[in-house]
Length: 106
Image: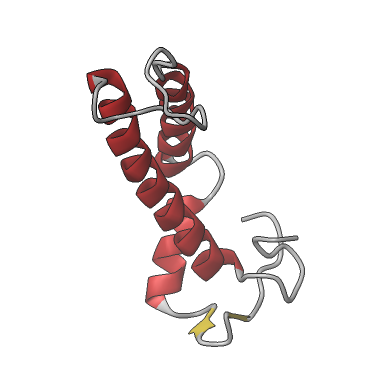
């Protein structure tokens, strides 16, 4: 990276550790992981636009029990959330969370 990373991510992952170095290379800008996440974001946007609002409950929440499309959207959102959670965890381990310069939150 072109910027300084914190010495210990989350206080337990030293900058010199092999695991953290591998994660830093994986999530660095311009990596295949970065491209993969952008593609997932685009695909997630398309899937969200596919909700069938003809089948909603009293609170206008899409129903997946009578709409196969809503069922697919509901299940796909779980997969997307898991992918985004893994991305967040990897980036927090690589860059640190909040304390220090260039951490995930800053």
